[in-house]
Image (cartoon, rainbow over all chains, first blue to last red; front, side, top):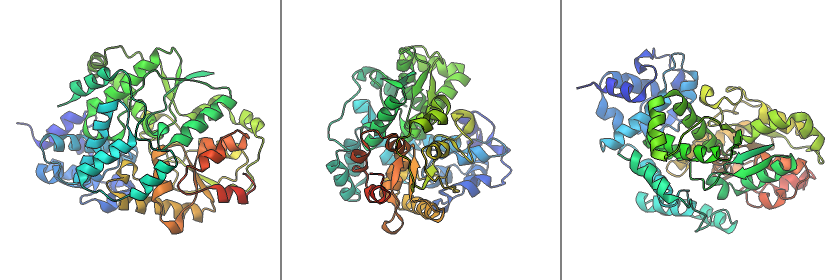
Amino acid sequence: MSTFLEEVNGRMGGVPIQRCFHCRKCTAGCPVAFAMEYNPNAVIKMIQMGMKDEVLTSSTIWLCASCETCVTRCPNDVDIARMMDTLREMAIESGASKGEKNIVKFHEAFLSSIKMGGRINEPMMLVQYKLKSGDLFSDMGLGLSMFMKGKIKPVSPRTKDMKSVREIFKATGK
Amino acid sequence: MKVSYYPGCSLHATGKEYDQSVKAVSDALGIELQEVDDWSCCGASSAHMTNFKLSVALPARNIIAAQKDGLATMMVPCAACFNRFKSAQHHLEEDDSLKTEIEEIVGAQYDASVSVRNPIDIIYNDIGLERLREAVTRNLDGLKPVSYYGCLLLRPPEVCQFDDYENPYMMDGIMGALGADVRNWSCKTDCCGGSLTLSKSAMVVTLVDKMMRMATEAGANCIVTACPVCFANLDTRASKDVRLPVFYFTEIVALALGLKGPESWFKMHNVDPRPLMTSLGLL
């Protein structure tokens, strides 16, 4: 059985994350580190220490906004942004994605909108997200104002060849 | 020049004024746009954050559709789509077995013939600042923008190959050529929080408020951007006491070129930029 570290490295490709020497440039440049429970470099150390449950159930992996500042500045080319993507995938697969439920629900609503029409229909996606998250009333005023300005419409053009889009979801779905 | 055009989902909805202003500016500068046939969503952050293969296959479907146009360039105005396309191309060109697998899923060959480019790059490098300067009919006196590039046009640099990734200058150059008094500032490449805006709104407010304060401190009276996600976050999430008007850079180009449309686009913004523009005599 492979260790958590081997599993993460294997799925990511690229340089092994243990190249990290904890200079903390990633954490210093991370725009959302202030809201994270573990800093980006701490996550690397936790993976090395086999703390799988703590990492996969953490809010940190979902709060990462994928701005890619960390990997751009890393002196050792550790692809921390890709590592966060990998950890999110693993958290979903193992059912451990409870760190930030609404972020996960947003991604589900977004992808399901593509699956249905090939393109994002913003009002439908928002309604789906609202129903999934239970966060029904925030941004109602904003949504209404955008609707009045003709920015969001209940019906928008879809991709015609939906078979090809569904095929992509089927073939890449796990 | 003729290019394939991938608008993406936002440009047909919340980023409508970006789509309309890109089209107006392209027309005025002699860039012919051919919309990619039956395009679909690039998958945006939600695909790459949760399913790597999906995040390559969705853009691949569109790049392969664009290949049929036989044009060297696909213009992608949305920074988020741009990033997903560049990233998919990077993976397809680096990893042969992934390429084979994706080609099987999409049912066609990826031939690396299409260069994905943002309109900032096309206007700066192909049209050039000289030609842009000559096309100006209304000098933007008094407009003091800061250029906000955000994350997705620039990072990671070896994938995006766009501009100086810590201190980009192309959008500043374009604004300067139009006669605007571009202010220098240190948040050009900061993150607005992106797609976390719905699920973690308070966090996004913290990020955009900081940027608004920094822009004001730099002496700016507005912010220009090339990303519908950045635009939406800056335009709708900033706290009342720090708000500045936000523009797509193409809206400002269109205004300086005396094209039709700016006023109708400005009406769609959340923070109404018309009082500023009227006070400067630009509307």
